[in-house]
Amino acid sequence: MSGPEFLIHPDANAVAEAIAERLLTRLTELQQQHADRTINVGLTGGRIATRAYQRLAADGPGSEVDWSRVGLWWGDERFVAADSGDRNDRGALAALQPTLGLDESQIHRMPADDGVLALDDAAEVYAGEFGDTVLDICLLGVGPDGHIASVFPDHPSFERSLSATSDVIPVRDSPKPPPLRISLTHPAINRSAEVWFTVSGADKADAVGWATTGSKPVPAGQAHGTERTLWLLDEAAAAKLNH
Ligand SMILES: O=C1O[C@H](COP(=O)(O)O)[C@@H](O)[C@H](O)[C@H]1O
Image 1 (cartoon, rainbow, N blue to C red):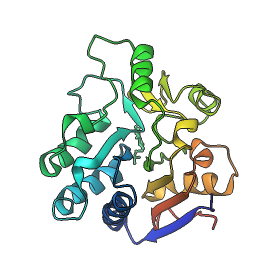
Image 2: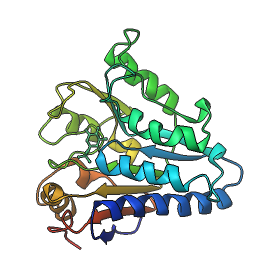
Image 3: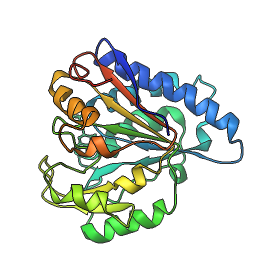
Image 4: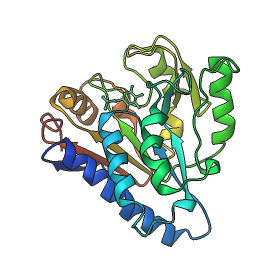
């Protein structure tokens, strides 16, 4: 594993464009290298990622990527009704599904709170679906507190994620609403070949500083890819970066 790489862009729009552009390039390369299998991507929620998905939806159809060989997973999800605007998958799929022609079998949504599964069972069901998947690329947003996926600092989810024997955990009392969530754990994230942090805005500068200097233990500081760890930042978010 090599050290983290930092790519700093002028503003949030440039970061979103860079994420989309890099995804197209990397997915094309990975599909050439692994012609026999699906390339698995872990999606994140959050503002910057949603902008990147819109860009990907515009540029993806004319690209060299074979979208029928891309599997979509989620790093975390809010455990609310499937049609809730709080869901992470809604923004992503609203952008990607109509233009990329994705089949339902390629889309691995985390379960919703639809009255069928309780939170713990929903996490277990997703763990079963995830199996021993190794994400080729895992996108992670970072909160102003240094959270990634639905693993929060100074919260039971952090210790639970670090020491997890399962790839997926239920999260209660999330400090950021909504309170019930499902999250990949650090072992699952850190099994990914590539982890790409996607961060913009001055309110994230402290979190980026803590994660990259280790000056405060935060979930983002404990995440990395086995082959590559990439930080895609804008200048404001990179203000306290250690590199
Ligand atoms: O709650 C969440 O927030 C983070 C970051 O979102 P942002 O809008 O501040 O960029 C996101 O990474 C995570 O997936 C989501 O559930």
